[in-house]
Length: 234
Ligand code: ADP
Image (cartoon, rainbow, N blue to C red; front, side, top):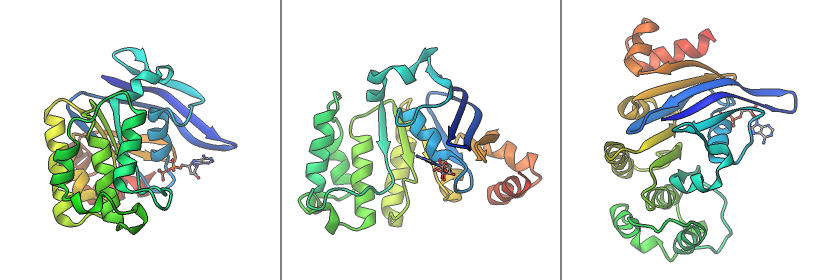
C-alpha cells in the first residue's frame, strides 16, 4: 500500500497543503478532486518527486519513496498538455523518454495503433491538435507497463471514442493490479472509474472514501450534487 503521511507544504506564506494523509491500495483507481488552487497538482508533484514537502513523507510497503529515486521508474505519468520544442515530433518525444528511462517500453506499438497515431508520429508536435497530443502523452504514460499510473486530467481534449479507449485501458490496467492516481474535473469519468475519491479543499483532505458513502453522507442524489455540497460547505 502507498501511504501519504502528514504531508504539508507552503509556498512562501501560502499554506498549500496541510497534514494530508491518504492510503492507496494496489488494484485501485484513486481520484483527486477539489476546486482550482486546492493543492491537487502540488500533491501529485510531491508524489512524483518534483516538489519537496515541508513535512511528512510517502511510503510504499513502509519504505520512504521520496528519498528513493529508483522508485520513480515505477511510475507512468501523463501530464497536462506540455509545451514542447517546436520541431520535435511525437516519435522524437517517445524516443527521448525511452532514452532517459531504464524500463523498456512493452506496449508502444499496440498503443500507437489503438489510438490510431501512426500518421501523426512524424509530424512536429506543434502541428498536432490538443487531443492528438493528449493521445501521445497517454502512450508515453502507459507504454512502460509501470505498476503506478499518475494521470493529470487525462481525458481533456479527447474525442468521445479516444476517451473511451483510454478509460477502458485504465480499467484493464487496474484489473492487472496497478495503482492509479487521477485528477479530473469531469465527474462522469470520476464516477465511472474511481474506487476512492480524495477531496481537497484549501490543501486539506475533507473526504477520502468511496463515492456512494459520499453521496449518502451529504444526503445527495448524485455525485455532482455531493461534490457541490462539499465544496460549498468548506
Ligand atoms: P490545483 O492543482 O488544485 O489547482 P495547485 O497545487 O496547482 O492546485 O496550486 C495550489 C496553490 O499553490 C495555488 O495557490 C498556487 O498558486 C500555489 N502554487 C502552486 N505551485 C506553486 C509554485 N511553484 N510556487 C508558488 N506557488 C505555487
